[in-house]
Length: 397
Ligand SMILES: Cc1cc2nc3c(=O)[nH]c(=O)nc-3n(C[C@H](O)[C@H](O)[C@H](O)COP(=O)(O)OP(=O)(O)OC[C@H]3O[C@@H](n4cnc5c(N)ncnc54)[C@H](O)[C@@H]3O)c2cc1C
Image (cartoon, rainbow, N blue to C red):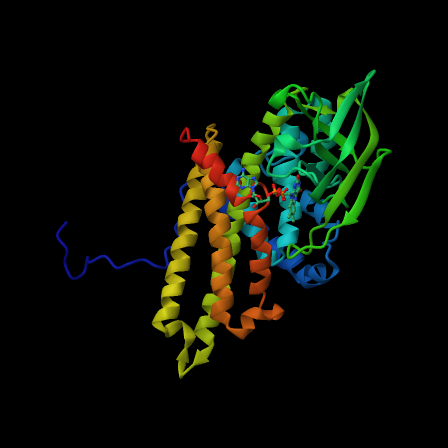
């Protein structure tokens, strides 16, 4: 078609067209989660940050609204949705302005419960997954130990068979929800001579004799989440507590980590976008040398750089999520998305502090909190360096 004065295309910066993975149903879900988060969670954020604990009622309330089982089957109380529904949750939670809350919920919905759904027996699904979806039970997941984090195969927590039972000894650290959880998905070594085939997962009730919730750990950010050092001393559990296949726990947990990393990446994009939006508004209001600071070219370019990074990360997350939802196991791309989104979220938050000037360093503006909270993502669920190893090795190096 020849261009005429009337038909010349104008850039559509205000287009609200959604990504093709999302349907109108996702839009409605986004609206309802966003409204809940803004009305019922955000008003408590400041207090929860101060008290370093978000209140447990959040779980049953979110369960009642159906937000804890968005992609789980209806027979366990879930909503029967797809993986993109979980992305919507991860993208809306940052509106609470409380990273620790978003993390505590994500550990429950996207880290501790997926292995029960995929590997659990029917009885385990009824006893653990269904109450988690209702928000009646709170979950945690224990991989990291004082002497082994990145090197998952180096964990020392041992589970030894004793008749019909297993006896567990060891310790776990940095465990999110560790103080509040009713049970933990625990990674143990059951056969130290079997290499990667010597690991087994267990569902351990936290009130079992010998489970000790030790220190509540103090952190740089994510203040509203509770982070525990846990000890397991002669903890006796029945054989029914084995989750998945005996000896296959390493592979089970590597699978779990893929969903955890992708949802973490989605949270990073959302956190960065939140910080960007807040700062864009500030840059339009704050004046210096007679004009809004956003009108200085150097500042304008900062926004352009940030927006480009956020959009690139978002596209990586969505495309990888599409592959994940469609039955692929794109470990390389998940690692790339996790690495890139975690890095740009910290870069964006840092730049947003800079654009705010002194206000950026003040707690009341909230951008320093985003920076502190986001910083975790370059460490948790696999560090930048571990992601680079996974990506590099995927090319046969
Ligand atoms: C707030 C918070 C919440 C967490 N929640 C949980 C949870 O709920 N459950 C859980 O199990 N864990 C949790 N973690 C633990 C987290 O996953 C680990 O901290 C992370 O995997 C890194 O392990 P590490 O701390 O032992 O570091 P280390 O493994 O000791 O690594 C130290 C440094 O060495 C580098 N390094 C290690 N190996 C290599 C290598 N091969 N090549 C190059 N560099 C390398 C790392 O990248 C890092 O920079 C949490 C952590 C934090 C901080």
